[in-house]
Length: 398
Image (cartoon, rainbow, N blue to C red; front, side, top):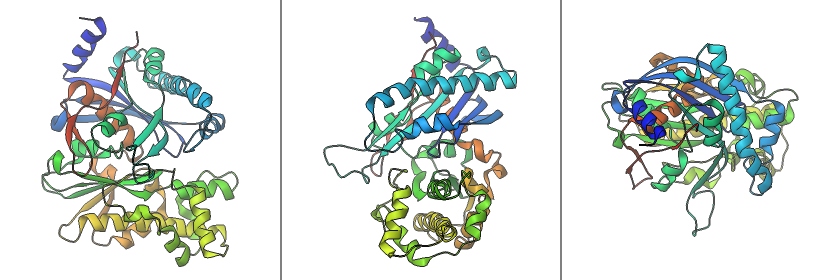
C-alpha cells in the first residue's frame, strides 16, 4: 500500500480527528479558518470548535481577484496564475494561524478547503441547453497540501454538480449533521453575500432536508456601500440604510427578475446580483434617489426575498425556530425587518445552538472534509435526483 493511502486509512479509522475548515465567500473580505476537533462521522458527528480566525484579504489581493471574479470575459492567463497563487496565500494564512494558536501542523489531520468561487452558473442563469449547471472555484488543493504539510480535501462543489445538483447550497449537509433535532422544527438561515436557508423538520432524515438560496444577502448592500461611501466596505449595523427611506417602486423593480419565479430549490450568485443589477432597476424607474434611500431599499429587498422564500416553502402548518448565521446577522436593520416580516417564527442566533455565527461555513467544510475521509456517502442532487456521493478531492503533501 502506498504510504499516503496508509496514512489516510489511519486517519479515517481514528475516533477523533483535527480538521481545519477554510471558507472564503463571494464578499471577498477574507479567509475564515476554523480548527475543529471532530469525533465520529455522519449522524454521530460531534464537533468542537478549538479556534477560529478571519484573515482579511489585503486590498492588493482583493484587487487581483476582482480581475476575474464574476466576469463573463477574463484573461485566461490571469485566471491560470491566480489558482496556485491564491492557494499559497491561503496556505500561508493557515500556517500563521497555527503558529498563533500554538498548534503544530503534525497535529492536524486534514484541511478542508472550499476555495474561492470565481463564477457560478446555475441553469437559471445561462440559457444554453447544450450545457448544464457549472461552478468554478480556484485555490489549488495540491499547493495547500505541499505548503502546509497537511492532507487537503478541496473542490467539493464539482461532485455535487456531477451528481445532479447545481453546486450550491452545500449548507444542508452541515446543517443536518450539526443541527437536526428530534423535537424542534428548525430553519437555518445563513446571510452571506448570498442568503440561503435549510429546513429541518423535527426528526427528519437527510433525504427530507430542504435547502435553497433565496437571492442577495449582503452582496448588493456591500457593493453599493463600497461604490458610493468612500472608505466603507459595508453598511455597519445598517446605520446608513436606517437614515434613508424605502422606495417602493425601486423595491418592486428589484424584485421583478425572473430568478424569483424559478421553482425552489435554486441557487444564484453575484453574477446576477451586482451593481449593474441595481443600476438597471433604477433606470427602469427613470428617477434618481439618494444613496441612503437606495441602501434602505436594498436592505428591505434582502429581507423581503428571504422572508417570502421561507414562507413559500414552510407555509403555516408548523412552528419553527430560525437560527441565523453569517455577516448579515450583524446588520441590525435587516434583523428588525426579518422579525417584522416573519412574526410567527422565533428568530435566534446560531450561538443559541453552540455554533459561532461567523465560523459556521468554515465548520461546514471541516465537516465535509471529515465525511470525505471517514464518513459514508452523503446525498446530493437536484429536485428529483438524489444519489449517494462523497464530495471533495484529496491532495497529499508529498
